[in-house]
Image (cartoon, rainbow, N blue to C red; front, side, top):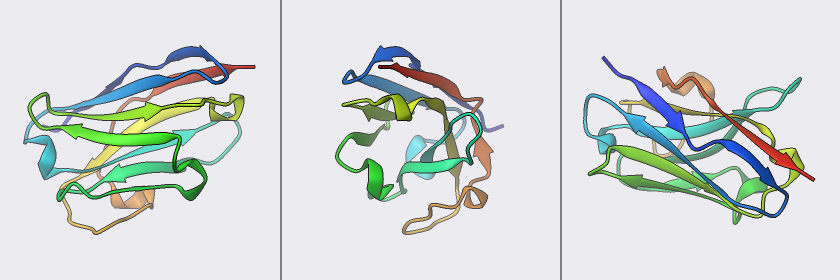
Length: 124
C-alpha cells in the first residue's frame, strides 16, 4: 500500500525559509514521479515542482529560483526547500506520486497517490 506523508510545514515570517518533506512507503522513492502542489484558501490547486524517476526536476515558472525539489533515496523522502517566502505562498502543500513515466507533467490528474497536506503560513 502506497502512503505519502508530508511534514515540515509551519508559520514563518516573510523572507524566511522552510523545508517540507514527503515520506513515501512501499517501493524506493526513485520509482515514483513525485510532485508538490499547493492550494491556498479560495484558489485552485497549483503545481509547484516535480522530480521524475530519472532525477529530472522542473518547476512552476513563477516559483523557479525560490523553491528547490530534491530526493533522498536512502531516507525514501522527497523534499521541497522554500526560500524567500512571501505571504502569497501561504497554502496547504501536498505531495503527490505516480509510478507512471512522464518526462514532465504538471497536471494533478497525472498523479495517483496523495499525501494529506501540510500547512505553510507566511506572515508579513
